[in-house]
Image 1 (cartoon, rainbow, N blue to C red):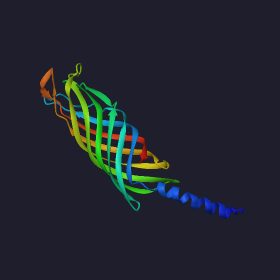
Image 2 (cartoon, rainbow, N blue to C red):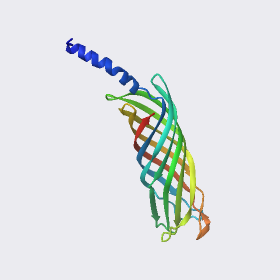
Image 3 (cartoon, one colour):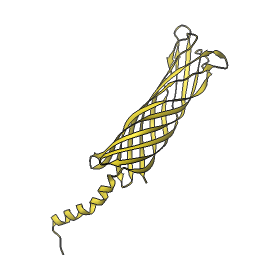
Image 4 (cartoon, one colour):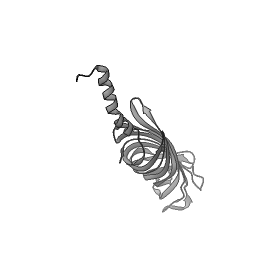
Amino acid sequence: MKLTPKQLVLSAFISAMPCLASAQVWDGFYGGLALGYTDLDAKHSYSNGAPSGNSSPDGALYGAFAGYAVQSGQMVYGAEVDFEGSEASGSYTNLTGATSAGRSELNWQGSVRAVVGYAGNLGPNPALFYATGGYAYGDFDFRGGPAATPTNGYSDKLDGWTIGAGIDTRIATNLSLRTEYRYTDYGKSRGTLAPAFPAVSMPVKVTQHAVRVGLRWDF
């Protein structure tokens, strides 16, 4: 039997409905890989009154994430963890009065976060628009001292809070493109300028801006 154009369109639409419906489902386990860029504020100060400065580390992030979500209508609720390596580093020199210099590096970081999202569309593609926030932790190296020799310092593991937003956009049945921004406050580190200046402490206040792109697989 030959179908009319109207019947062909209707038949194609009905055939596509199960696929479109499954693409709107965002609950269950998922995981993925991400690449990003981070720009941090690392504000150095000194207990002996040496001039302060911001070493402003920046660089690449690379890592993985995993989570679980429950969907109710178009609302999606879940939890997610991630872990990332980092190439972020930076330094400063302050020649005001008694000179000082500092350097900081982010070695790795991770987070445990809640996720709240809305299942909608981005153009023709199903998309999950989400907000996220929770606990963050990271491993840092801090160096400082006189401008000529900023080689003394310490390593510290910091923790704090993170908050952000993102979009997961379906590009295949179980595959989504992720874009995300997050702000993180790591608080303040504690340590001295050992071994040369063990009596001088150099606390560093660290905050972070980061953007990421990645791929999410739903299992």
